[in-house]
Image (cartoon, rainbow, N blue to C red):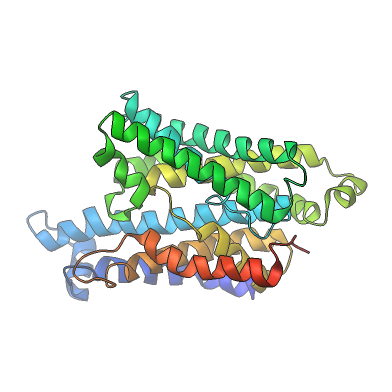
Amino acid sequence: MPALLLLVSPAVCLLAVWVSVSYGAKAIDSATVRAAFLHFDPANVDHQIVLHSRLPRALGALLVGALLAVSGALMQGMTRNDLASPSMMGVAEGSVFAVTLCQVLGQGGSALGLIGFSLLGSLVGGSFVFGLASRLPDGLTPVRLAIIGTIIGTFLTGVSAALASYFQISQTISFWYNARLYQIDPGELRLALPFAFVGLLLALGISKSVTVLALGEEISAGLGQRTALVKLLGAISVTLLTGVAVALAGNIGFVGLIVPHIARFLTGMDYRWTVPCAGVLGALFLACADVLCRFLNYPFETPVGVVTSLIGVPFFLYLIRWKGGGRIA
């Protein structure tokens, strides 16, 4: 099953891109879409929409979905926590907070500066949550860690909103709260690719070690694994993946929570398969959610975060009710 999924993934992703560029507030027929790719006419409005608006949006949705899903898979594997995800552990909120500071300090015009702030924020947010949890009694247990992460994330979001209101940049910063994929900047997308590539490559590189680490730290250490190094590399990967995703599309919840569970259901506990499969499934999940959000309140668009939340909240409650937010076995 994992090998088959990875084998057919390029074709399925191409289909997702085709659907994404074809459907929206303005219907564009297949012949026009083909012509936009093969015989682009700058004077044709439909061609402009396909190549300069919908195509970057579709590619951005695939990339951001893959990054969030892989980040969530790494976090769940390294912490053995079913509830771990970028949106639950303060990582994504830390990025949004840093992006807000970037705008306040007047660095918002630089795409590289924006990505850099977002990466730093994801690192600080995640470190703050895990550092605080490690100092509290039973703070690292799954449910308590999720609660601490939610509290810190809410605090960071509140501070970000207060700063945005005080410095009158609420309109500018609203993109990172509402996660509207249609505002993805093609130039920023190209600039983010090297960071995303390094993060994904690092995730694949440590996937075998994460499989061992998911068995428990004592077992991992007994097998001769350098657990501290694996966690450090994992933290760097999560920082890169989440920071890039937030810089590109804002804070999108639940992708990193839901998709890794689906990937493990298909692949088992071998993270050499789970990580790439989570990336593929995350890409398709967010791309499909992005298409769906265009039709929930047609012809107006619904923020994609609403769609992911409609699916993610019941799934989150399921994990707490039936798994107790327990450790991954």
